[in-house]
Structure formats: C-alpha cells, structure tokens
Image 1 (cartoon, helix red, strand yellow):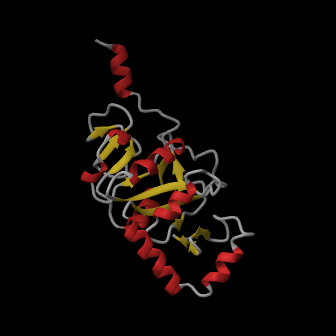
Image 2 (tube, rainbow, N blue to C red):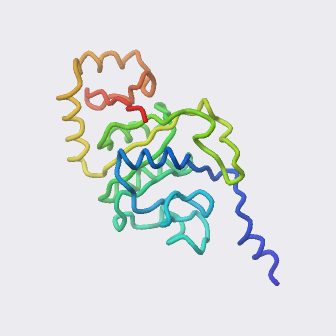
Length: 206
C-alpha cells in the first residue's frame, strides 16, 4: 500500500554504482588472496555474498562501510566511489588489517602517496577496456577505455610494507638508477607505480 517505500525497495537503478568485471575480480583474488567481504557494494554490484551496502539493503550485513569496524573482517575487498578513496585510506590507517583496494591511477591525487607507503605487494594494473566497469544497466563506464585502474594490496602494518620494499630492493636491478629515472617519469606510467624512500614500486600486469 505504501507505494513510495515499495518503489524505493524495488528501484535498483544507480548510474554511479559501478561493478568491476567479475573475471578481473577473480584474477585479483588469485594474486592477493580471497577476501571475506565486499565493503562498498550494493545488491547489483557486490562481488561476494557478504557485503556492506551504502544504503539500506536487506541482503547486506551492514550499511555504510566507513562507519564499520574493519578489524573484524579478513582481507576485505574495497572498491569505493572515487570521492571516498581518501577517507577509505585514512580509515585503513586507523585499523590493524590488510585489504584489497581498487583505485584509479591518479598520481597527482593527495591520497596516492599513501597507496605507495601502505603497499605490501606489487600493485596490479588492470586492463583498460570497455568491459572493465559496468553498471546495473550493463553500460560501460564513460571514462573507459582511457581510465586506468589498479588493484593494491595494502596493510596498516608498517612492518609488512617495509618488508615488501626491502624485497624489492633485493630483487630489482639497478634500483638507484630506476629511482633517478622517476624524476622525469610520471608515476603511473611505463608500469612504474612510484617511488617510496628511494625504492621504485613497479606495476604488474594482470
């Protein structure tokens, strides 16, 4: 009888709700481990049965990921709206957990250095094609194929990120030369994610 509430419960159209190609998601999980929860999702975009929705959803375990305690979940998958990437990284820094985070490759963004600092594995550059992101209507993201996305394995544990960078120093040839090259090479291009304390962090291909 309540037509307004009924419409809201049935209306799932949201043109700002983008979902990563499930095949790409599965490949990311093979690299970074299977996540226990999808923290920024909806009934049309969730990759896992256990997910947190951004609005009321009877199938979601909670609403509003930024208001939840992330310590209770292991290796969550996080693909937030681009405007919430900064708050997401700030929240991770306050919790003792690891996560899989998908972001655009925007080296000039204020949150980008934190991605490099908190990385605990080589980030993955995702294939930039029109099948990478779609909404509930099956429409491709309007910024594709130009939009570059990457998947990051992040940790709030400084020991893990430092151990990762030490491993890079021991495995990458001519690290000092590569670090100098980045002065004239924009991070995010030529498969270079950036440099942290003199250590170049490369991208890997999916």
